[in-house]
Length: 245
Image (tube, rainbow, N blue to C red; front, side, top):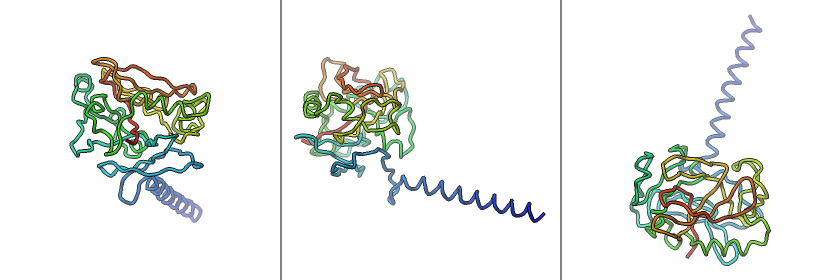
């Protein structure tokens, strides 16, 4: 009987310890003000600065060559004049909207995930001209090209990607994050409203359009160290990185 009681007390203590430990681990992802923080792995050998958007979301920034970039994906739900960006979860409404909209990947709203990967935006939000914090803007195709040109590496995409396999699917080829850009694979929402490619691919809108329905996006991939420009329908939901004016 004494042996059973001791075993029971041990199990109770283990359970209490597990609950306490799990709670602490979860709370470690949340700042004291209740706002989730990114789990991105930055380049600790470089110096980052800070930027806040109109909603108080904080981002690391990094200077690369003559340009200063956000080192995290945008996650605002407001334009920089304070007006709300339309949130669309419905696939039907997503594919028909031309006023500008955002969503979370697969409409999932875990705050730590959003803080890490950011939100996805249709190009129509970019077209508004005030998606980024004041003093910042969505980069043009040429501005992305300037970024690539100043990276002294054969694998320019690898120099932009977060190193390791915590967020990128294996093998995350040639990823060094030597630039400090810390690109993460936030996936996409396609024109028809479906989602795909989280942890496999990262896509970032440029402000450069090439037709009435298409614009360019910069793409990075888990399976190689290359970088590319992709022509995409403006209804597509991609990540956003802002660059300083």
